[in-house]
Length: 124
Image (cartoon, rainbow, N blue to C red; front, side, top):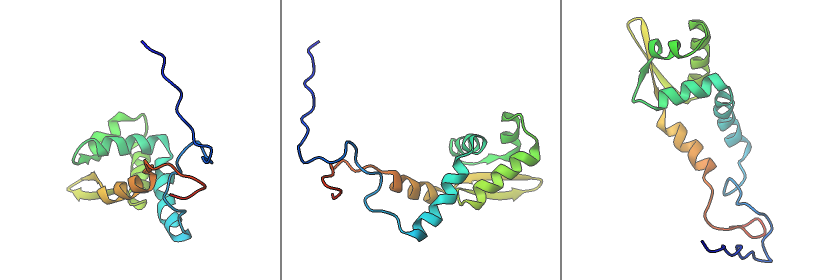
């Protein structure tokens, strides 16, 4: 196996990595997105979100047994995800069914998308 040459680095390059966003968020955008990140910042909620996102929809009765937590605690975490705008819920009889809100994740994904274009001096 041959040794790879180190990448050529422009003398004009300012940062080693592309910025996360194309432009800085304004206050309203940050206020809209922060609750989503806050909700996903909890390990239990992140696991719940992963379980919900892995299927078209899932019943709370299938989520609760995966955790060593009480039903009310799981319900609280699901309420936080719902209030953050990450999931839809629908009551069917005695159970509540959850599904991902795709538009929320499209919004978060677009925010986190890293441009393939290198930046020079903070511009694209």
